[in-house]
Image 1 (cartoon, one colour):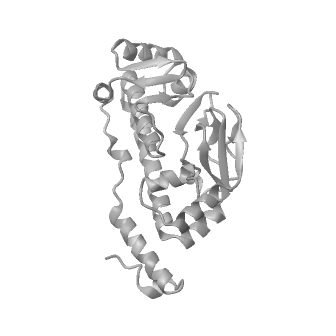
Image 2: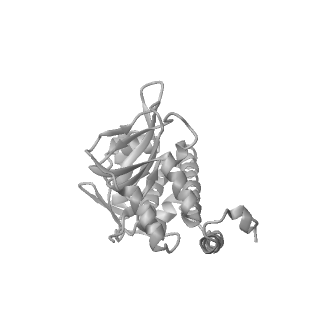
Length: 268
């Protein structure tokens, strides 16, 4: 079975059984193609589905009262979109495709089934949700406390790091389907300011930029500019995952008995 993007993403956290792979693969059985700039959902719509990004890039946003827009996050292949809205009946953000993309929808009820069938996948989903929140917190710091140079350098390094989770071979060479207007909305800058900072980074031989391609020429130099600490992208949940594997083996060995009856909900 050819690995889907979501399987590659989950295997970043833990080896998966064939049953887990089949379960994850089932989430991507209804792919839908979206053309560039297509809206997947808008604020206020019913929130019934999650999505996995199989191909392409998408971004979430909020429209402001004055007609401006704040881009909240950028999603790359393998990412799960919509976890932040699990508890809400209506969408609290909008989602738009920034390049031709393929997304796979699955209902919230299907996620509950996944949790019931695999403790390991449940744990990984929890970690992805936690990482999602950590990224949003870092975005808040980026918007409020960093300079324009730091914001752009930090964004490039973060996207590079996140792409590695889906086993995308980038070799410090990013293809960013982001216009300067989109980057401006994501970083809280003007398009003119973004253009100016790109020029500065090029002149300092930190990056090279050509037709939507950005090559990170000096990663360490960019780290110094951004003050980049990748700790918020480097999870360490091996102990929790190991416990999940042990619990799953007990459940399987007991023929699907209730976890509470097995005493495996107790912490070790």
